Length: 206
Image 1 (spheres, rainbow, N blue to C red):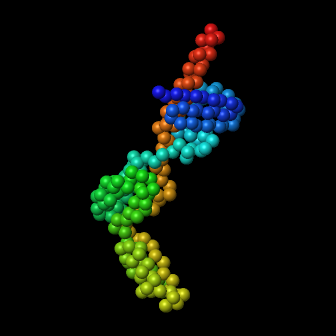
Image 2: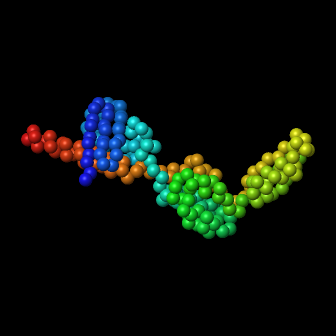
Image 3: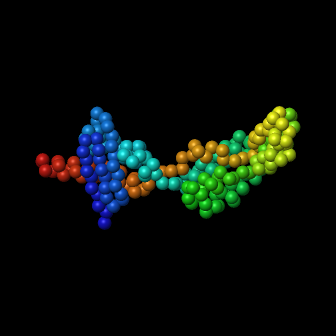
């Protein structure tokens, strides 16, 4: 059986119960009485999470569906902008979307960071000589062994850059988390409990 406890003091609210304990803190002219503040706003767990003493990240969990949506969006952009290498969608489906590694955040990002399709790299020397390779490692090998600054001199500085293909180069910007269902439950429970408290007080004073 679920239980719920609300404890409030100026600018603070503790919501505790079967789905976890969450401490909210918000300093403002309208939040000395946290009950009064919550009565006037909608239940928006994602927004409320920013008021947690432990921070929003304390209630965030990995959302595989968001990860898949980000992958599909990135691929769709490449296709629509006409720079997707041939076979990209099939490769993404087989190597990424069908992989069990997407079930966990750390392994999902590791999987994506290592994904490349149709990628080409150019290693170009300051002397004008250049080669194209199908992997960064191969381009690096040319720079290190076949056209080494150490062997040829400082005027043979080599720069390596990607010239074609698809990879996920913006992973640090991806938001693939959501607030946990326990936190969502407690937010709605807190709003309901305040309503019950108000009704009980009204009945007593009637």
